[in-house]
Image (tube, rainbow, N blue to C red; front, side, top):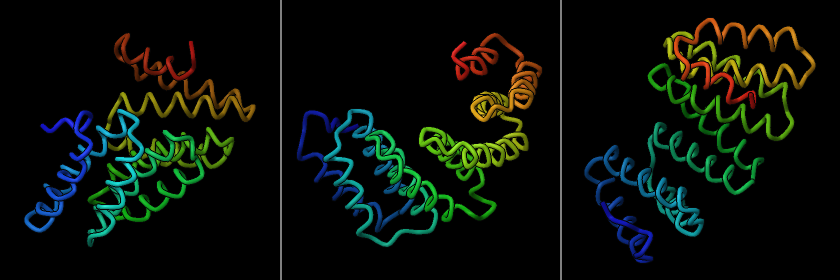
Length: 192
């Protein structure tokens, strides 16, 4: 794997590589782009994030790729503190992930959008997004994700003064929690 941290010109290489892969196999090129973007994001290399975004947007993208690109752009905006842009990106990603085949992606975007809304103080919107995400997570029986969403919902309900609903979320989570690690996921969000 190429380490872009010590090679500023590596972004040029990655961009060229992605363009070649895009011509051969979009999914492989997109995967390489996501990995490069994630490394740049993790290391707070904003110039590389910006360049990689600009590069990927120059080509034709499938609906699936648009959803993924807008999602990671939203994560970058959120990391930089540009929450309004993050909301815009997450909403664009949701629009691109409407079909049934991409529901798992949609649920992740809903969760992140909800947390961004919550950070903006838009608790009603945050609650709506989390409620929709919770419905999907329950369908997949992903206990850890359900616990995390329940914990965030409890926090939102508490912020709104709906303490009974907050308590219901915590109680449901504790009922679902099978291990101490599960309970830790639930309580970590609550700051307990």
